[in-house]
Amino acid sequence: MNDETELRATLERLHGLLESSGELDPDLRDRLRATLEDISGALERTGGGEDGTSLADRLGEFTEHFEEEHPSLAEVAGRLAGMLANLGI
Image 1 (cartoon, helix red, strand yellow):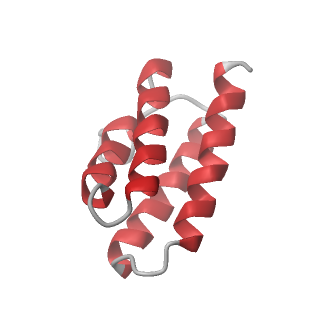
Image 2: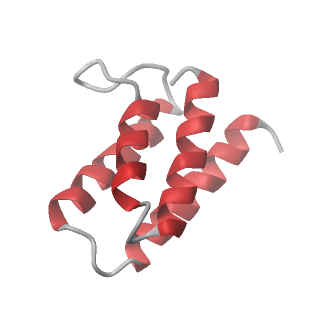
C-alpha cells in the first residue's frame, strides 16, 4: 500500500469514527469535519490551511482534545497527522 492509499484509507476511517462518536462538542465536530475536507482537498494539491498552519498540525490539535473521551478517534487522528507530516501537507 503506498502512502497516498494509506492516507485515504485512514481518512475514511476517521470520517467513520467521527460520524459514529455521538457526544462530541458540536463546534469541535464542525472544525474537525472542515479539517478533514481540507485534507481531502490537499490530496489534490499540496499546501497548508487558510491560516498557514499545516493540516498535520491542525489535526494534531484535535487529537489532544479526543485523547480522554474518544481514544479511538484520537488514535486514528494522530496516525493521519503523522502521515500528513511525512508527506509535507
